Each structure stands twice: as C-alpha cells, then as structure tokens.
Length: 319
Image (cartoon, one colour):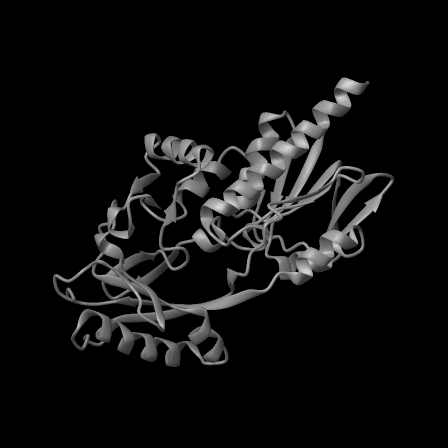
C-alpha cells in the first residue's frame, strides 16, 4: 500500500506518521525548499552573522492528551522546549521552530521543491502531476495544503471536498524580521498586541537561541489585508515603528530587515476536522479544517491517518 501526501507541514507529517504506523509506505511532496510550512525558520545573513528567524508561528500550545504526548516525545528528544513567556501551555521548537517537523520528516520520504499541480486517477490508482512529470502510481492520495490551494486538486474527484476547500477563507499575515547591533533593553521578550500587532518576539531570548539581538513582529490580518500590496521595505518601516511603540521608546536602525507575507496565515477554520473518501482513497487535512493553530493542524492530520488505517483494517477483516 502506497500513499502520496501533498504538503509536508505539520498536518501532512502527522498523517504520514499515523499511516507509517499502519504499515503504509508514504511519500510526501512539498513545493517549498525546506520543512515547516508556517512553522518554518528563515536563515538570513546579517552584519551580525547568520540569524535564524522564527518568522511563522511564534509558538504552539499542547492541550489535548494526544498532542501533549507527541510534544513530550519532542521534549525528550531535545527538539522542543516549554516557553512560559507565551503562556502555561506554550512550547517552541529547539533550536529553531521547525526542529520538531524536521525530526518528524527524518523518518519519511520527503520530496521538497516539488509543486504538485494536478491529481489524476487511472485504473484505481493515483498519479501526481508536476509540469510535464507524472509521479505514481499510489493507492491513496492526501491533500495537506491550505484550502485555497487544495480546491483545484480535489475538484475533479470529490465535489464535496472541493466545496469545503472553496469555502475555506484564509487571511494574510505580514511578519517582519529585524536584527540590531545592540539590545533594545530589558523589557519583555514576548509582547501580545495591541492592534495592529499580534505578537512581537525577541528571538534571541527564546530557549536554545544564542544569536545576536533580533525580533519578529507579526501584524494582525486586518492590518495585513489593508497593506497586502505594500512592498517589504514599507512593511518593515511601519512595523518597526509599531515595535518602538510596544517597547516604549524609539528603536535604532536595524542592521537587517526583511518581511514575509503569509497569504494563508490565518484560516477561518471549521468543525470538519478532516475529510476522507474511502471509495476512491482520497483525503484532506490541515488547519483550515479545524481552527488554525499548530495543535489543530497536527490533530487533523493524525485523525485522518487514523481514519485511513481503520478503514484499511476494516477491509482486511472483511476479506
């Protein structure tokens, strides 16, 4: 039994883990050059040396028993640590935010830099298409990417799934990264809001970090939507000013500044959890099927993998 998963973020990797436990051979495909999705880390050369900016999710919570168990294993393996600054249940990856996902990916066949543009089904087998290339055959196909990107892949095979994906609406999030030649002072290392900022984080103060002074400032979706067409330089200038307001004094000129526009940064979410069509072996998972947080994305992928494994076991028992 072979499965293809489109998307190597936390939902896709959680699904892959559950399928591997059921003795399904899994190949994951992702258009990005690195593992992580919105838990990714951006390494940048700066006048202070290379800095790893956690420019996506600033942290994640672990509240459900299943995810707490998963995070406890990451903690024991040294790739996650609690971060009390963000709350009692808050955790981060160590030494970078994407470290837990890299750890998950180590046990899987992951094909990076591979943007899948179409799915086809021939003789009850799935094929994945990338430009003029065709990958397959696979017995199962799972789409673990944002709903807006999933809809075109699902539309020819399951209209109900495609309709759910088309109903998903994600809001953009601008994230600005700054490095400084000196400390910005002894204030808090993690600041929540107010609008238009969601979070401002002193990255070098997080567990397992040793880089020079650097900050990540994330804008809320309303501000990000209003500034969607702005260039990086404009966004950096505006969010640098907001950082100064948050810490209570003007900040010096950064020695490095960059911005990332996450087009699918904040999904509206739903109560569907995951989608699975057992008749044709097609599924979908991701935070757009839940509530937009790391824990929910993992739960979506894990639940889909478990549902597929249960369906296979039921079929095997009926033979």
